[in-house]
Length: 384
Ligand code: GLA
Image 1 (cartoon, helix red, strand yellow):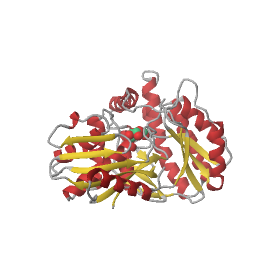
Image 2 (cartoon, protein in one colour; image 1 turned 135 degrees about the vertical axis):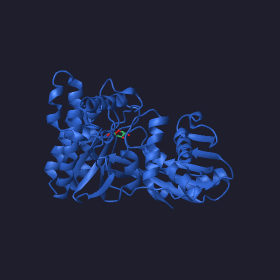
Image 3 (cartoon, protein in one colour; image 1 turned 90 degrees about the vertical axis):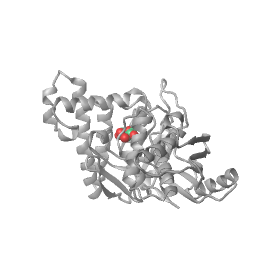
Image 4 (cartoon, helix red, strand yellow; image 1 turned 45 degrees about the horizontal axis):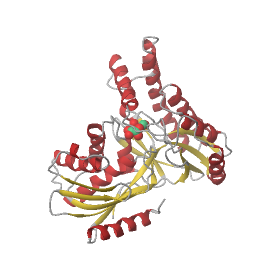
């Protein structure tokens, strides 16, 4: 992991070597980790992410044409013309091309650029490395076009890139977290009204991100399948989204739609847990905060069925270590990362104990090393 300043200097230096000129500016966009409110965003619900100290950085300067030439430290070179359809770009550069094409679609006079990209957000760990790339690219296009585009609109375009070009019917949480989070606070997002509220985190607790090293591509059908089930249930009960329903409303589903009942029950109880957790953080009721996190994990595992063997295992270990208030899987699920809320004075010992006890379960091989990070809630996107 780099310090953010070191990551920026590296991108600037590599830019000079690669493009033989000075970068005009640098965009830095953090990844995010969600404290609670999982699989609620696309159901018009509540989420509570923080931005991470890890980020994606683009050092860039305008080019004289429609051509974007980007070089990623991790993924190599890419080139595309904004006059071509974004479907022509494959792999990571489709995020960039998609942002340019969809900004143009909404009437922004985007132009080409040269850019060098560095990132220290672990990829595929459910820490929003793709949303950070989308937002950083969006901000690069905006800066070069000198256009007046609200950050909210860039976030919506990032979501459209996921939905229309990457085949994931994800919600708006990741892009909004990367864009609007602030240091020291979590960001309460009402995904129906798009109201944003900062919730200060107590100093006595630390968020520990536990990356199991297991990976799973979100575009695999399970994510979209969950969303379809939620839409089916709300439509069958005459509601625009699960946000409008209460547990009592689900009674009629009974044994007719057992899966639908469990999926909807997760979403409805999870929305309440987000609001309860916010109250607990504000009142410094940390024991209760931990219980809510644990209940969220149970609901995701049993009702929503998006946990996995590695996530269950690391969460169970964490929950039993001294100083841990609570733990749960985070993000889309199945693999990747979990989080724990830990008493700050116990963090070092906590990380050691979890690392010593955790081994990836047989049957779910890791693609990266297991890593534990005690993270500070960090600031959202910026242009330097
Ligand atoms: C992924 C999606 C988000 C959200 C989470 C689950 O991170 O990108 O929109 O749905 O999964 O909470």
